[in-house]
Amino acid sequence: MGTLDTDRDVIERILTEYAQIPYAYGEIATQTVFDRTRDHYLLVNAGWDQGRVHGCLVHIDLIDGKFWIQRDGTERGIARDLEDAGIPKHRIVLAFRAPNIRKHTEYAVG
Image (cartoon, rainbow, N blue to C red; front, side, top):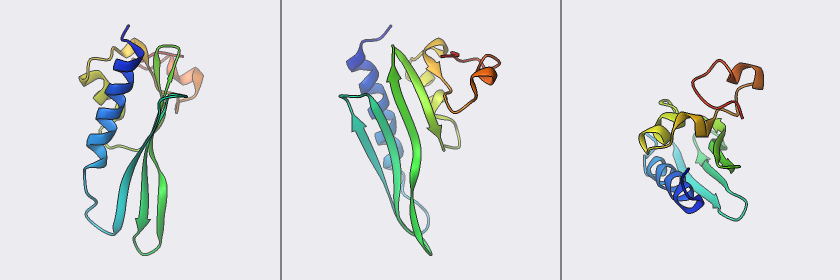
């Protein structure tokens, strides 16, 4: 199992890389929100494109040594980015899936 600081660093690096990808349209900024005290990590969009744009693209929590993906609005899937960073599947929970569905994935149930 990785250390808590290492786990935090992995999430922050991945989300920071996503935040640097510019939108092709509108005046939309992508912001990172890191709460190391409570271990909540978010990627948020905010701006304007023919109306207000504001929402959470990615939300990951660290809970009991596992990466709980609460929201994943990426095309590729943030779980794959975590795997590429060396996080094993048994430490990744697709929390946006119902608990009875998680057991049918390659990832941790909870």
